[in-house]
Image 1 (cartoon, rainbow, N blue to C red):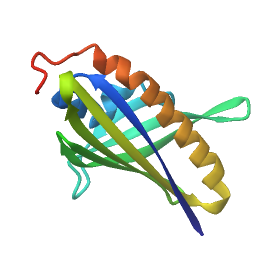
Image 2: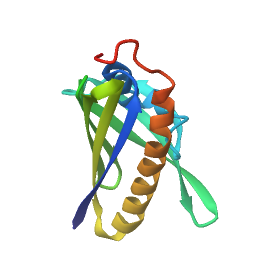
Image 3: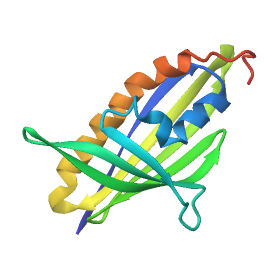
Image 4: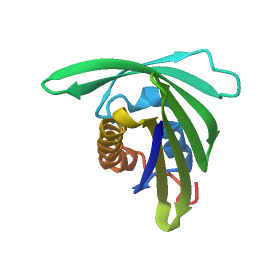
Length: 155
């Protein structure tokens, strides 16, 4: 039996929509931002995906850190919306739906909703790990994007 739950967060940064979307649609550019990622490798896209990646995370299991590798597919890669679905055995999926919107004074608002589904025995651990990792990414994201302010605030 699968359990499903979601969480969301918002980040604001002074950057262009193009720069924010490019960073968020490319897991390879997130290695230094995402607390669990240790390796990203682009692979041929699955049918229906715009891009696909094999991503290796290092998860804590007590005092031990275990590497796990999963496939992430970028399904939508637009300047105002990005949808990524990551799949890992057994029957665990993480759907990331990101919406980007230009606001006044060169600020980009990034709204992210993460939905995780996993078998009931794994759900609590997987959900806690996903939430901690994505909130850690969010905490770093604004500062990284602020390093690339837009030349024209309306970009």
